[in-house]
Amino acid sequence: MADGATVFRADSVTLDQLEVVPALRARGNNRVMWPQEKDGNGRNIHGEYEANGDLYARLQREVFSADVYLTGANAVTMDGKIVSTDGGGNRVAPMIFGPGKVVIAMGVNKIVRNLDAAFDRIREFCAPVNVKRHLDMHHRSGYGELPCASSGVCTDCDHPRRICNYTGILEGALPRFSERINVILIGEELGM
Image (tube, rainbow, N blue to C red; front, side):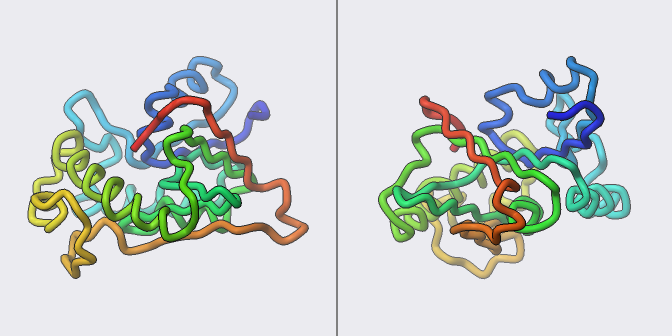
């Protein structure tokens, strides 16, 4: 990261495991923001979207003007397509457009054969595990009503708290954006 660069990060188990934010903050050369950052009790330090929409929503929009956006992804196909799904679009959208540089960190467990396998991974593993994470770590009790919370498999529901509303597939980039997306594939299993 260039000194002085504004860095935003997504809610990512992989980034948690890599301890990226503490390392960048210890370095002290960047403004590092994480809109979904939690306190020791699992509560968002910037307020919950429903309760304090102004601050939280402002930070979500501010991501688009960041110098660097750090995130994970749900899957990467053998031919290099990166697939990510989220509930509000706040992780997928900045991967596609906005921040000057995007760094996507993924463990080898995210590698799948093709797009069908990527969607299977998201429905059969990522979505149910992420719902459980929202219940356990983020104290989002409303997520317990989702069918995948009890069945362990995505049922393509129409629940208002559905966490798989937006899917982005990164297949390439226009020449002027060719250096924007940077993928770091780590030789171990990380994230969900």
